[in-house]
Length: 557
Image (tube, rainbow, N blue to C red):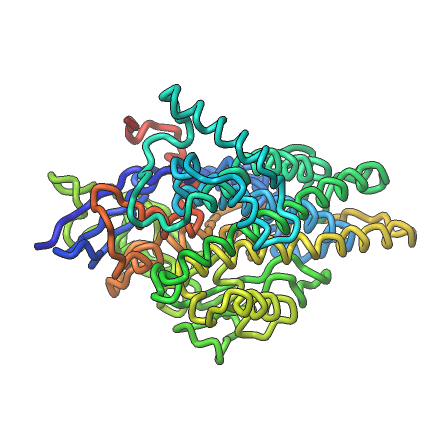
């Protein structure tokens, strides 16, 4: 007999997410619904404003993805205005964005996703000497690795346990049968969990050097950047490089080895394709390597049906959004340029479940050529791997060879987690190139950072880029020199998508189908797969009453 399970809220994410699943008598998930039960506003209040102001406003979609929306909005304006920033502006934007990627990915693995793989309490029973040996089997010089340090970590954890105040480690599912790491592996990774708190701070400092502050950097403008004095100050550039080396060391000696440890003990789940999702992958391309975006560090394209032999070019005209199962008026599919944001809340049934085939989320349903597509680090690496990208393919092949795993393991929760780690290393290793490019430009006398621009009377533009969580697009229309329509389709909108007109599930929903739960009262397996997407629900829903009227009240218990 089937049962319904509701996990609400999903914790360790940005925003509010509700997952409802139906499990059979063997505790296998047979159906799933992902819902965003709360919404917040931005898009509608942009109407009537100067488009050059949109970047600073759209940052407020979220307190985490601030630079992401800042950049996408600026790119949309530049596309509408038909202007190209000077090379130094492109490079500096890449440097700011790199710091965001490095910080975001490291924080995600350790502080948001790591507790789905790591049994913290188990680390208390680990043998520190064996933990050292384990760490050294994955890296010759592991980060912060010694018996003394590991014993200190255990004492620190024991204080949490004895005090009864576990803080971030409270209310988890310690001892669950789905945890597979030995005690020593748990100790090594929880040690790096604590180290990563400082590394995240360093990454934030990197962004502030050229961005002005973190979060909500302020040095981008339509046409370029304003941090003129910073990029001409050798000390400031040196500060960025110094911090970059610290972060790179952590990636090489902690993050990558820890993900390989996880892959060793969870490889059966990867081979079984647990968490595979819709197996369609989309990437807009990110980190431009030239001023026209003809070449990008992160690839542009799509892969349909996990067919690695046939990557396809991206056709922007095929992007649409639907609201057949979303709490908005209508059920038509619209290109973002023509998108509408008109609320129509109908809630859940009396038992708190999804109402049959009705509407059940504030999230819209993006589609590409009428199909759901996954976006994010895995999507970028699938697209790049299929295209034979000179950086991505060798990195993936060498990692698979070292782990003794086939390429099919990529289509899983484990593959999604591994792709994020490999992407972090690739970006970190390439960032030196941008620093050198900036210095070379300045030495040659090219100090340009801005291209003059004026707001056209009528225009439309889009900003498409890749951000830590995936493909991000901002679309705007301008009439009488002000914004007449603004739509943002963010990574978590793609991934959290509810069903569409054809009742096809979105990526979150599809990724849970077939998952066996060891204990339905401890939905660890649901958290592990959903967290692997790095959800950001605050970014995915943007609506507000433009007159400022109260529409509803919500109490979070």
